[in-house]
Length: 102
Image (cartoon, rainbow, N blue to C red; front, side, top):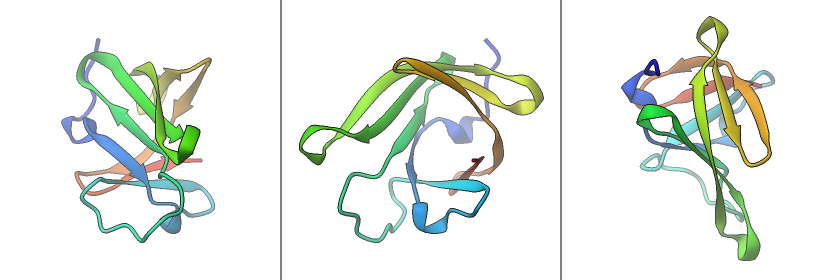
């Protein structure tokens, strides 16, 4: 399986305060996020195709859906988690920010 950039191999938390009309912004855990009432949605890419997607679950704790990623066309990633699959178009990333087209 082709690899993606090692910068992406981590858990990324949604920084919805920085979202734009066409981009969702994610930051690593060590980013100084403002307080949030609920757990922040997050995604985690792992080497070899492992993928986790976290969303608010029971008692407002993050619940993980296990899945996988694979390269898509044009540098996109196809992810499968839970009962669905979708294509993520990564606009930009480095070790401090991940921007995904909405």
